Each structure stands twice: as structure tokens, then as C-alpha cells.
Amino acid sequence: MKSGRTRAALLLLAGGVLFAGCGGSDKFQNKPRPPAPIQLTGVVTDKEVTISPKRVGAGPVILLVSNQTDKSHSITLEGGGTTDTVGPVNPLDTATLQSTLKPGTYTVKAGSKQAVEKEIDPGTLTVGQSRSSSSDQLLLP
Image (cartoon, rainbow, N blue to C red):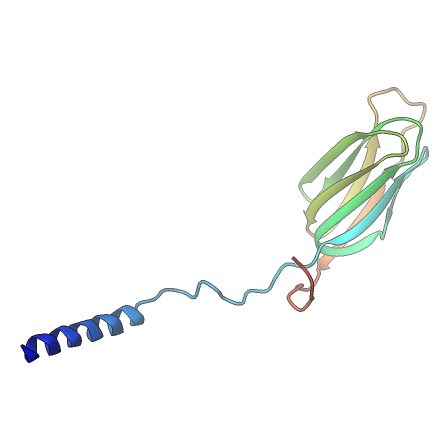
């Protein structure tokens, strides 16, 4: 009887050791987080679209645009193979565009379905090298 229990205990122990030795990659690797989103602001006037700041590093951006004209406009972010559009944005209203931008030059355009006397000049945004990881920033989701 004793040898049966001993044998069973040894088999369980050997199985446990083999099972513990089996393992793939660590599921919880400490990979760096992407950069934290950066907030940009934009204003559409009768003359032009203005973006601030005009230069940022690559990564996620949130662009909040205010339409300060007396007509509704669609807002379009173009460049780097990306085209994001929101709108139409009513006069004195705001709209938000969210995108992850790669290095390059982007334009922000304000368009209207109505015929206008003069086109609104687009704003330009220059995106440089990638921003650093947000791994060391507290209170991020």
C-alpha cells in the first residue's frame, strides 16, 4: 500500500514539475506605453484655418476646432495617408478629430457645400519624430 501512495505522490510531483517548466512567453511583459495624446486647438475664420501648436511629435493627437465663421463647414485633416473628416460644424460650434499621426506634413481644411466667394486657406501641421513613451506618467488611463 505504501508503495502505491509513494508512486502516486512521485507521479504528481513529477507532473507538477513538468507542468511548471512548460510555459510560453510572459503574457505580462513590460512593454512601453504609447505616447500620451496631445491636445491641439484650431480656429476656422473667414480667411484661414489656424492650428496651435504648429509642430508636434508623432503619436496620438486630439484636435479641437472652433468654427468662428457664419457658415457651417466640414473639417478635414489630411496627410501621411490619413484623411479624417468631421462635420459639418455649425457657426460658433466646435468639433473634435482624434488620430495617431506619423511624421510628415498635414493640412487642416475647412470646406462648405455652399458656394463661397473665397476659399478658406488651410492650416498646416508639421509632425516630427515620435514622442516618448507615457510609461512614466502618472494618472493616465
